Image 1 (cartoon, rainbow, N blue to C red):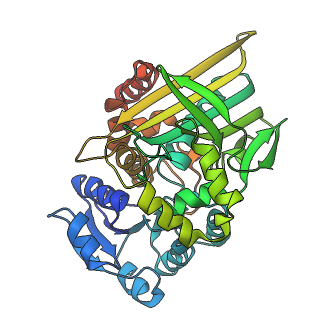
Image 2 (cartoon, rainbow, N blue to C red; image 1 turned 135 degrees about the vertical axis):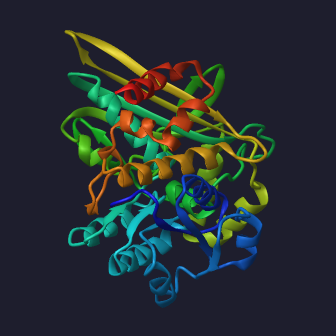
Length: 376
């Protein structure tokens, strides 16, 4: 796209959408933040960002709104994204979203096959940034044996029975706890059950459990099938969380009553910005004639004005928008997260912020990549 200043619509004025809008506006784009709720717009939109009341489920209204936009970023619940993507194709608007939902991504890929615009789903943290990290880890070895990716968005101070606070979409959280999970086993993509495969993990002296959840790998299982022997993605939580969620979703069958499950989480795990995001990627493979292990560990701490999950998800999405505008991603059709190289990703304004704000001694590898790219 010629010129970098664009008209960009951000749909969904929740905790993530509002931060995405602010980041894009700070880069000089003409951003409009839209939501069906006037109250949510008034509460979350920054003072300098224009807002508009638009119901994303009303496709006629959405069509009118997107007609004047170069790019739309959907920060809406996953179940609205099929319609938004379809309208974006009709209006010639390039499309980005944050979905972890596998079926939604499959639909977007289908309509992208004949689209004249780019459709870039699964931006954010996991899927999103974690897929870029995973692809880079695989490229570090001549032959890859295993890649393990672990991501947790957690309260800094767990005080409730769930040892968890909601820091992003409740609908997305329930979805990833209920749907089958893709991994690579013996070189082939396979499905495994959610909330299973519980491992104990110790990172920087803190004990976590890790278990299967859906959607975190995005399209990476397809991309690396046959190139990696074993690859898995698991969510990090404080110990004991998986068993409670299994009781609720499977034992009490609330997976089939998501409205009730949503009410339980709203009451028992209230939103907090005092959160922490932990990212752990480790790979084992052959390099220079011997078996070696490599790893990346990143931690982000939330603060009252900006939660860690808000920062990492919004920055992951905005970095992909930046790369697209710089011509470093395909300009039409279906775009995967791993189409972005880690060095390019980290050289963006949003990506460099992820390097700067990481709280871990293990960021030296990322800093080196970012510095090398900036000097090139």
